[in-house]
Each structure stands twice: as C-alpha cells, then as structure tokens.
Length: 437
Ligand SMILES: C[S@@+](CC[C@H](N)C(=O)[O-])C[C@H]1O[C@@H](n2cnc3c(N)ncnc32)[C@H](O)[C@@H]1O
Image 1 (cartoon, protein in one colour):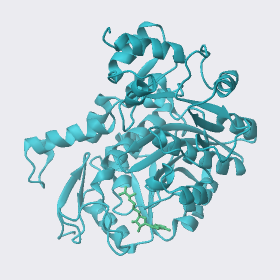
Image 2 (cartoon, protein in one colour; image 1 turned 90 degrees about the horizontal axis):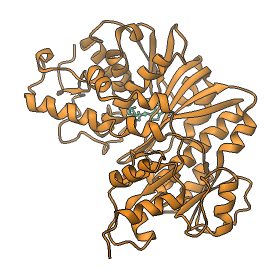
Image 3 (spheres, helix red, strand yellow; image 1 turned 90 degrees about the vertical axis):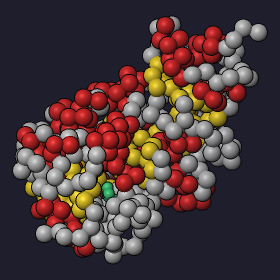
Image 4 (spheres, protein in one colour; image 1 turned 180 degrees about the horizontal axis):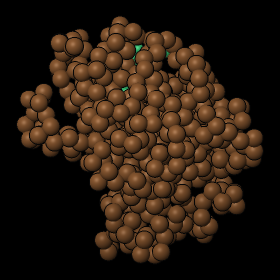
C-alpha cells in the first residue's frame, strides 16, 4: 500500500504523488534523478496520447492482436497507466505495456500506484523495466514507443527506431525549445544539423526540423514515416508518427525534405510553385514565406533560410478528426460520484474537464487542413501587408472558405490559420477585413 503523498487525479486516472512531491514542488523544476518526476504541465500531452492511441487502434493500423507498447522514460508512469485505464476495455485487454526508467524509485512508485489504482475495468498488463532506454528498448520489437526526455530526444532516436515492429507508432517529445526554435544556434546545428530563423514561424520550423531528423534516421533503417499529430504545447514540442518498414523510402524522403525561406524573392516563389510546395498565384505580391525543395541551391549563410526541414504533411486527417470533445469527455474524465479519495469540489472536476478540452482545442478542425502547408500568423500578415489592425483568424477563415478554399484554425502558440488558398486570395481576404479608408 502507498501511504504517504497527495492523491491526484489527471484525466480519469488517480495517482498518489511520491512523498517528495508537494503542491508547491509539482512541475519541471526537479530533475534530481533519484526523485520521482511528475509534471502537471504535461497533462495535455498525456491526454492527447490516450486519444491518439484509441484513434490509431480504431483505424486498424496496429492489427487486431496484442499491442506491445513502451513508455520509455516513464517517470511516474502516469502516461502508461492512463493508456491502460482510459482506453476502452476491449483495447486495454490487448495492451502489453512496459514502463522503462533509469530510476528504480520511479518504477517502484508507478507499480505501487498501479496496484492501488488499477484500471477501472481491470484489463491491461503493466511491466517495469529498469535501465537505460537506449539499450532497454532493443529487448524486443514494439508497436508503440514513447520517448519523453528532459531536453533533446536525439540520443534516444536511433535505437527507438530500430526497435519498431513493421508497422508502429513513435511518439517523441522535445523540451530543448531554445535549440529547436533557433535561439541556441550551435545546439541546433550540433543536435539536429539544421538552422532555424527566429521569426513567428520558428516553432513550426523547429517541429519540421525534428520531423526531418526522424525521417532521415528511419530511412537509414529502411523505414518511412507519416506524421499523424505534431503539436507545440507551452514549453515542449511533441510529434507522433507512423513508421512503416519499406525499402522504397528514398524518393519519398527527398520529396518531403526541403527549406523554408522568409521574405522570398520572385524566383524562389516561382520555384516553390513549380515544385508544388505552394498553390499557383500571381507574383504581384510576394508571400511572407515559402518552402523550397531540398535540391534548390541554398546559400547556407543566408539568414532567411531555415532547414533542412520536413516540408510534407505534419498531421493525418482521419486520425486528427477523431479528436472530438465527445471522445475526450468519455475517455479522459470521471465524475464526482466515482471519487472517494480526493477532496475535490464539483468546480475542481469542472476545471479538470476544461483542461482536457483545452488540450485538444482546434485539432479536430485542423484535420480539414492537415494537407495544407501554408500557416499564416494573422499579426504577421497585417504588418507584412502594411495593414493597420490584424484580422481575426476566424474572419479570414470565413472569407477564404467563401471563395471555395480550405482554411481552419491552427493549434499553434499564436493566432493563426492553415489554408490551401493561393497568396493572392489571402491578400484579397485580408483587404476585405480592413475598414474603408
Ligand atoms: C521528462 S521525465 C518523463 C516524464 C514522463 N514521460 C511523464 O509523462 O510524466 C524523464 C524521465 O527519464 C528518466 N531517464 C533519463 N535518462 C534516461 C535513460 N537514459 N533511460 C531511461 N530513463 C531515463 C528520468 O529518470 C525521468 O524519470
């Protein structure tokens, strides 16, 4: 039995926090490897992981027998415990989940929590594995590997990819934000072999740099990737990709890698259109950014350029469309009647429900534009076109849709939308939002 420590609820899963954790010390401050680490700021990431797993199993991608999953840097083990507890019973029955961590205390604590608060339907198997993930992951093949480190995931990438079954899902977090968004240029070059311009799209560029690294590493092991969900959430980035064994990967890889150029010149925009990296548009007004193919002759000293990065889709339409409020509510929340342990009020439960809904905001809408490369930040758009007030993303979306193109809000840290509309149409819609002179 666990006796000490606060009882906490995240999603629909209880955990007793280790006695070294108090309400005041919750969070990312403690990286003491002897302590059990629990960071409530990652709750949204764990919620999305549960819903993603449900949607992937629904899609049939992982077949219909046992699913071997590893929560590779498990800490409190809450992610794995949420999979088992919050997935529907018939899915949990198929789950064989391993929690791996260097820290034995963490695994002991996670297993004690699992004993005290087992999955409500009683299904699913959880096994601890103490050790270094870089070698432990090679114990067997996996259908699902989760890598959620302090800082950069790069040290774990190669063996994680080698350990994957022929069809598998890899979920990777990165918290080395300063490197990935280009503020720490040397760390970015050293770890990811890329450059990122520190502008409004730096977070999107950093995410694409990470996807390019995963794709190249996968290709070196005869595997191809298909991104299914890519998200920045406050201090961290998370990408989830399907990985499939295939020897025909090299063409596909080259098509999906390239560069992003800020303030592009006419010939660069034309090259982007020719490579089908942006919709045809007149070149009267030039866009804020464009993608270029990997083969384009880039001057590496040109500070307008970010990359090499992934220029393909960063999400999958049908999987993202499954991030509905109904699914989130039914899987990831519990009601007051079921609580015998927390001194939560009805309002506390209401706040937890709101947190759950916030963690999936815009993902379902963004599914409609998952194949659209163009991400527009409305504040940047207004200043680029010398317009006074930035338009509301919703107004822009409505105007663009009325002209027959796709547009939807983006799950991004700044007001923004994605669209397949040509640049001319975006400018025309912007002008329509401005008050008459
Ligand atoms: C950011 S925490 C993981 C958080 C957890 N995934 C969650 O959702 O709460 C990183 C964990 O990785 C563990 N760790 C660090 N290096 C490791 C390695 N090489 N192999 C296995 N575990 C490691 C640490 O002990 C720590 O518990």
